[in-house]
Length: 282
Ligand SMILES: N[C@H](CCC[C@H](N)C(=O)O)C(=O)O
Image 1 (cartoon, rainbow, N blue to C red):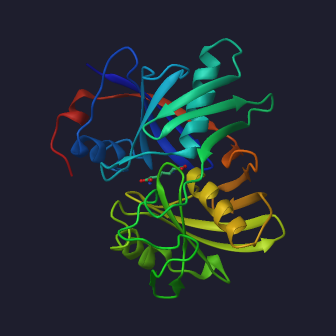
Image 2 (cartoon, rainbow, N blue to C red):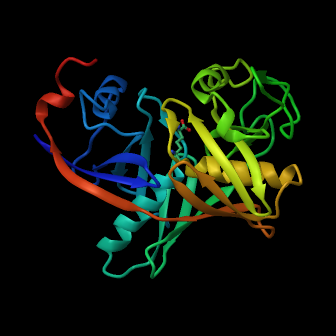
């Protein structure tokens, strides 16, 4: 049976969105790899599968698969896209909750089309990242090339944020994969390099776990803000400037939750040919 999809993105971090709420769908790692492949398949940074909510209070369950077939516990840019999609179904509903394997994420769609997601609490204990052994997550004894002493934050997925003098100058294609697979990270990690370019404004580039360099990373922007606050580099609200655009992030004092605000976009819709998920994989 052919299956329809939506191609959406948040600041150029792009997604193939499949709706499995009425017709169940489970993709093997190999199928995810071919679907996410930019030549053999549709191509995307993550595959997003909408499923019926599992918890009371949730409006939709969002499953997140990386192009390498691994599953992630968070995808901030996609959460905004899904929130906007489901809100539009609800005839003017602007508040809803997206569920992931990491928890419930309340979202609100604003009149200007921007979406704010409560990405939940920043998890900062070494066990929550997770790390292979006890460590101070404020500054890890981890490095490669010019990068060292990252701050580790879990936003439903693991991040290691390296502060540098010039984020543009970092050879992320070289150092990103080595750090993603560093032995300190038993579940690997998303790797951010960040430079505070002005008060309340941080330039960040990202090597995503299981995906590589992407134009933007919502959970990475959240992790970067939290790391910057912990290091005394910014206040609790800042703009994170990525290759694809800017997200506004706030680490709420009252409950430690991280709020992310940014745009969403739909590029096109289409239909997956049956052969795509049954044929030979690259
Ligand atoms: N692009 C996503 C992050 C994907 C994270 C994934 N690469 C992982 O394995 O954690 C975002 O906007 O938050």
